[in-house]
Image (cartoon, rainbow, N blue to C red; front, side):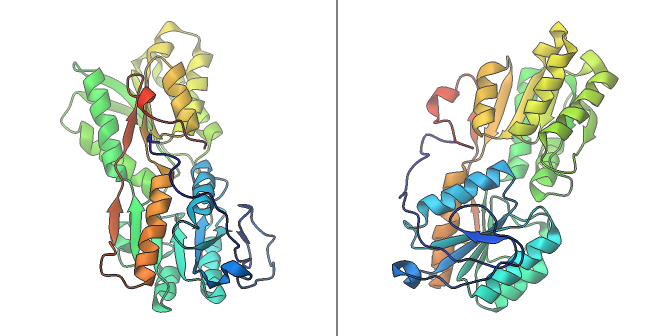
Length: 334
């Protein structure tokens, strides 16, 4: 995250309770089948934004914190509905939001297009829907009102550029993707593949785990290391926490070559910052969750007000964290 982390108000406002896996303010999901209620108290005159995401995903748990932290600054009450990494639950969350009469929905979707029928229904009901931290997939451009994200294709490009720079004479390595089918993972892979095309860089293997899970990433890395050994000069891992598993797998090898493997992760979270400092050759490609969530609220409010300055697609630049640049940034909490 950038040195600008931390701007904005810290007030936490009153929030709605929603049905199913939805909750207010605390960041934890309510039990399934919980009762619903409208905003109450002095803050009831503010519009409500519901955040729909997989809350056990660390980046989304931190994003939820940032929605709460800056809600008052952007004039919102905020609530959350945990989609639990499941497309059906995601649909339930969106339908609950519509039933609750929320004023805006922010969503970090489970997949590229499964949310679209539900979000289209929400939009038809006059509720703006903004994608949080991901852009719309090509087949889902009409499934949201706006999006705020980094360009994960550029993130993959950046990983490719770093590897090409580190190995001007060429190298072989492996790629461990993010959650299979997730738009961010797909785009990071696309950008990386495009970036190394025509270069003397060979990817020996590419695999995706079933979730953004460190243990799965470690198992994949262990299998790749067993198969390819010291042919692995670099490992591009789609997220910093997954790279923790990669580091554990390399340490288990207990060979000098393993400590020299270049590792690149994406996210720029707390773990990523620590790994830049601790691993000999680690780069974290950072997306600033606070900047993204703040922009989601800003644009959502503009769309609520039908302000002509509202922007449909908003791209937030990556921050590149390595041993030389890390001193320029504040380490994130997530």
